[in-house]
Amino acid sequence: MNRSDLLVAIAATAVGGEAHAATDPTPAMGSSVFEWNSIPVKTNDHGTSRQFFDSRTVSLEHFELHVTTLAPGKMPHPAHRHPNEEMMIVQKGTLEAFQNGEWKRVGTGSVIFNASNELHGLRNPGTEQAVYHVINWKTAATPAA
Image (cartoon, rainbow, N blue to C red; front, top):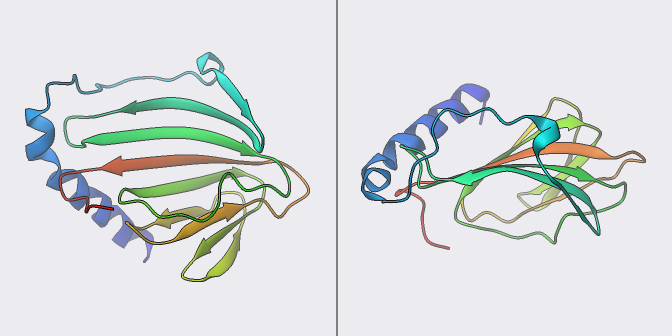
């Protein structure tokens, strides 16, 4: 999948969720600014994370962004699958993504896309921390687990 295909898939997914999102009584997140230093840092056994938002929008049932700092040699969790799609953007360091039965190494500026219900995992094979942004979304078109 190239970048153009990914953008088309994201746009199509967003449009597919409009009908359900419009009937949800939970307030939709509007235009917002999230200042890095105002986001609380949570420490865990593999590094730290910052939860920027976890909400619905006008076109998405669920839209979530968090940033993880992953310590060298660590995994945030075992390989898993989930119905929502997600994208990860590597801000700093080296990561290995498990997809389609193999590990793929990526570095700063790389993008990882995990499709719905496909087994995937992540680890930091480097000697320095890796920082990556995780964007998750769900629409009415998102399949069941």
